Image 1 (cartoon, rainbow, N blue to C red):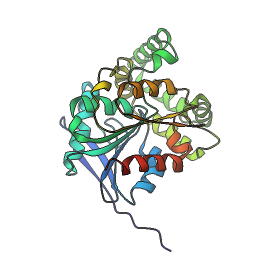
Image 2: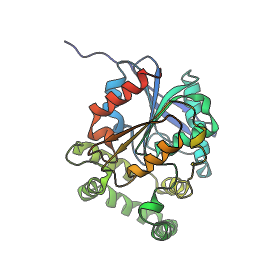
Image 3: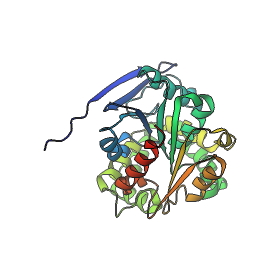
Length: 292
């Protein structure tokens, strides 16, 4: 039996400030938008694309400043507010007033801040391994993270070519891939190594000034005031072996969002959609089938 043909189209649309936003559309039907994490790439959703594009219109896009969504016209526009306009603009461009939205890691605060500005574009929210406020403070302690970040940023300003080379060498190598896995970013026994490798190479190609700008947004991020206002069906998924954004962060979301559903993925890492794609797909399909 031949594989089911799934229509795919790609394109760009111009954001409100002129930044080109690259997108891909797979399949037909009710729209689902998948948003990856900071410095990540569309590949993180490939099991979900294959599964849901048979029944839905799956929409992926590169976050401004990432991969094909460059150049960013103004560095000052690397903010959650502009990210929200990008998502709304993409849906308008594709002819949709609303969609199911699924976000992973940084894609969760992306959703929360977009909901604050444009709640009408959401049919449902799915929040995977995410957070409502800066996750680094609890994990590492800002006393360490913020001064280190400011030091690296200042050194990059003095010698950008050197630091760009150091960044690529540090991130795009097999040792870094193993560290990313062992730190809880991936379950190395379950996730295909090529997916971890592809992630590292994607991170290494992100321009550092853009990364710095988004990281600053993360350091100051707090959307806890948004959570009680969410009145759309919400699914929250946590990996119980996620050491980057532990389940306590997702429990905070569950406690504050009325009627939110919660799934804890046993042995799931920070990227449980790659660890256990079949389990994740079935849980998401069940949720969407009850709220289409």
